[in-house]
Length: 67
Image 1 (cartoon, rainbow, N blue to C red):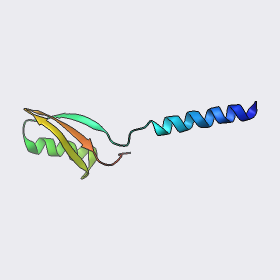
Image 2: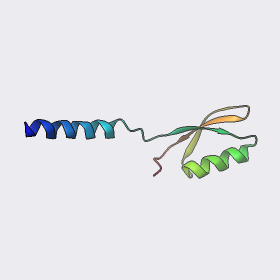
Image 3: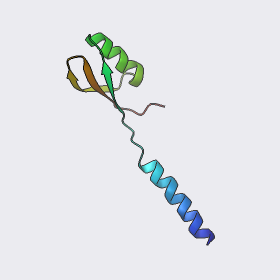
Image 4: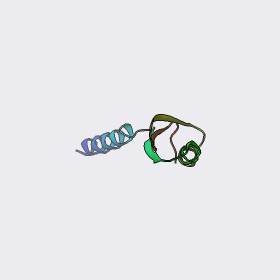
C-alpha cells in the first residue's frame, strides 16, 4: 500500500513538471517599434522573437525560460 502512495505522488510530480511550458507567449501593445523592443527586452532579455505584428499589437515569444 505504501508503494502505491509513493508511485502516485511521484507520478503527480512528474506530470506537473512535464506539463510546464518553457516558452512563454505574450501580447505587447506598442505604437512604435522601439516600445515593442523595450517591452520584449524587459520580459525576455535578449532572447525573444516577434511572432506576429498587426497595427499596434504584437505577439512575442521568449526563447528561454525566465525565472
